[in-house]
Length: 223
Image 1 (cartoon, helix red, strand yellow):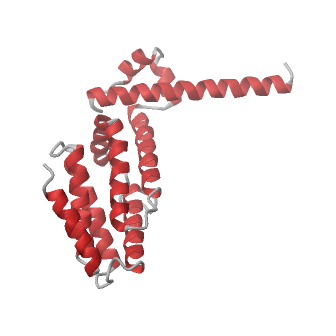
Image 2 (cartoon, one colour):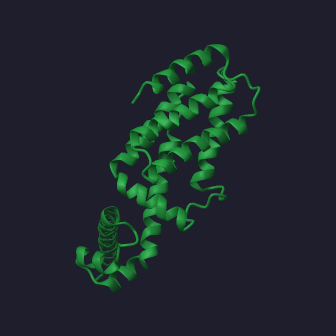
Image 3 (tube, one colour):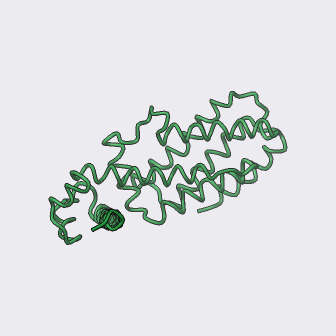
């Protein structure tokens, strides 16, 4: 076989390998969704995927390694959602942000819940990492507050970082309540928006504060 033929063969084998890995990951996600991470086993995954356990070891490693890959994919999707938030108006921006997250989580709610619970326990999200999901959330919240101040929505009497920490905190607390089953996704959305509006209201200009009051009242009547 000539070099060109060998190269095509290698490319085909690599493509098939990636397809096999994707299929196995999809099946692993489904098993974790239906059974939870603790009950998830490589033997069941191998049986479902119709491959051997050594094949899974060769492609990914151990059970923990598969979960890490799935969590990394989840984090990438969440970062993409956050990075797409470019709405000028803080109220419209808050709605766009939480609706995008709501839609993402709704697509596979059981998996996201399991992933957040297990990921937190395994300390996979690196709260202090400058590139981690939590620091990314805080940076975006800070940029949002600074933009709102610069565009005349906020007075600037309260430090932007302090406001950003509150914005981040209300979203994280609501997510924890949802992950642990205390609230559903619709209540999660409402709780995040309520927290964000009240945070903005603490430093809002009079006109913006009136708009926020209307939005808060609307959320209060939602059952």
